[in-house]
Length: 421
Image 1 (cartoon, one colour):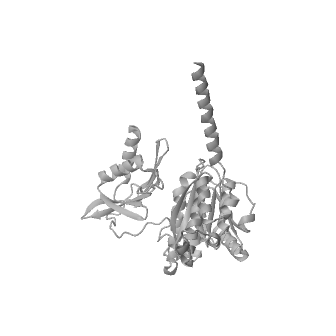
Image 2: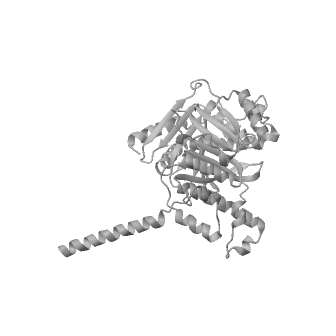
Image 3: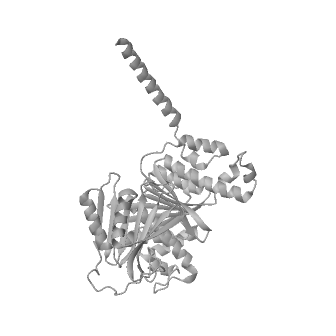
């Protein structure tokens, strides 16, 4: 980071870090997947013994580590994290917003936006406690029309107690969407396809958030096999005035309605339907894939391993191992085809207490892991549908033979020059 960039960052932090800060999130870790490294950091203000502090929460694996910092310490801490650990930060405050992006070459871009109310009289005594109400992407107390109509909120914006799990699920999903926004272009219409959309709570939320809250020109297509659900969703879409949100009846495996998509979403597509959705996304060159798999039965029927036979004897353990193996192979296959892939925890109370979400962002550089995947498949006698839909490129042996041949040629040329000399 150059001195000019550091000075600009420190000035932005000096402005945004005060008692009006709502939340700061530092993300897009530089060392993704490395054990012991933080994947995200959240910062919020609080009062300790009548003194303003900033609580930092670093997420490392499944653990969260906290530390309380003074303003100067918080400024230095954020600067250090953006120089060494993260490439993105967003600070939200009553005063405005600061977004920081760090390129792979280290170039720092800072965007600062004041709110319309800045300069007006703010509340005199902010509530800064350890038990502060959780900050949601869609906030309580602010009615969202489609959530009111779907029975999640009252007309006053209060979350209906019986639907609070759905409200948490929607916000958790929007957090994942929020994280990938820097990967999506904002200068043209975005095309998003939601396979197996069902009742479409999350589809409506995604459209509302991207178009109404973030100002993206977005067109979303929802696809499902239930005709009555599709009809209801289209009625609601027209009622809410969501002109570029449409739903169609169709099967994931056979859908050919588009030729290019920016983002593919697949939530609880059952068993191999997830594989067909992932394969479609790769063939379309989708920039982003968000997938919450469901009912991973295929590998459960195939899985065999002599060493693990005593464990696989128990049905529930085999089922869980097959599910983890299925999603692990899916993630590696996406890496194989040029996606940077994460497996994250996604809360969803309708299906299971906790689900996994596969988040993949296309980066172009394809991982040379074909041989590793093939060894894994052979060890457990597996034939996943995704590996048939997206064949493993035979780059390993051919590349090794080519490299070895080039080395042999170089050695022979060197020997001839030595003999001639």
